Image 1 (cartoon, rainbow, N blue to C red):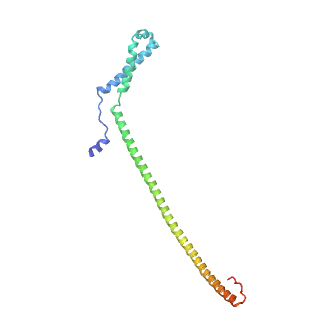
Image 2: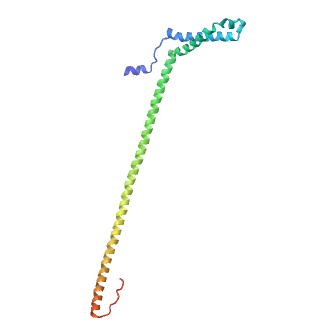
Image 3: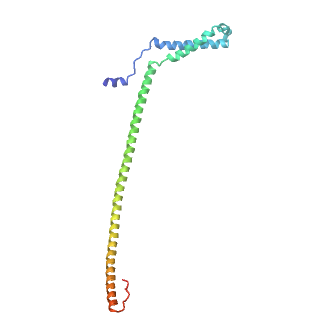
Length: 184
């Protein structure tokens, strides 16, 4: 693990060899052929390249195209450019990890804020439910009290009606006039 950390900041040691010269050589030959084609097309210097290359153009144009494409394809980065790429890649990876950690931290913070809001709302709902239960209980007691008062009043009225009814029957049997009942 310690060896990996030591190698992380180090750029790879690449020495250009013959393989690095081949794409450059192909590119140079391609550019020279392009210059010859240009010179023959406009008959630069009036040396008659146009007539000279007319028959050879069938082979030289594809050769020029293959050399240009091969030079581009085979032309890799030099050691310094490769080191710069790895440094850029390392910087990009560090930026990506920092951005990811910041996004995760922000998401956690939002989750915690949302959680606090949910918890506080749940607590508030419980408080309101308790208050509502107290109000309901008070209303129930009030209604129960009124019902009890009405029952007592009903019993009193029933007693009065029974008393009047007995008196009315006694008076009626005795032949005395019956007085109508007075509302209580």
